[in-house]
Image (cartoon, rainbow, N blue to C red; front, top):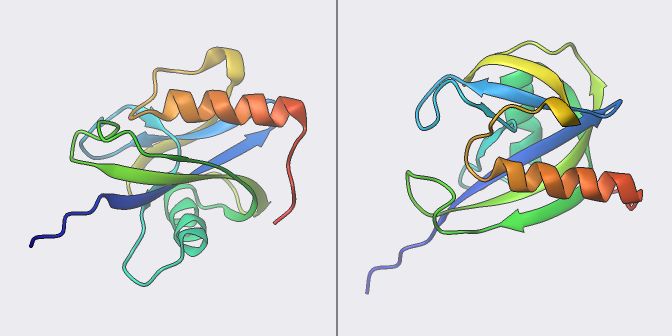
Length: 140
């Protein structure tokens, strides 16, 4: 019996003053497109630790997790194959936005000025703004 499992990823949603932090992807798929910062969870790594690592690598920011936003598991969300992402709402605790690692750009966008987003990130961003506007953010 061959066991096939989806890959596990994480995405971070950082909203400050009504704007959301996005990175411009350096690599395929969606090279040059804007996306939420995040990436693959390494074997033996907690999703929370993977997210903090990926955010730092891609944006230069130190962050902490505010709340679990949701789990997104559409088998077609990533053209490389079936991935499941755990998306978190995060907050900045230090650093200055500076693109790095897998990003060629990193900046904040106003909610009404969002570019087209890679993967299913438009759905995740919509869910995040809905959640933040309702003010339901338990502390982790």
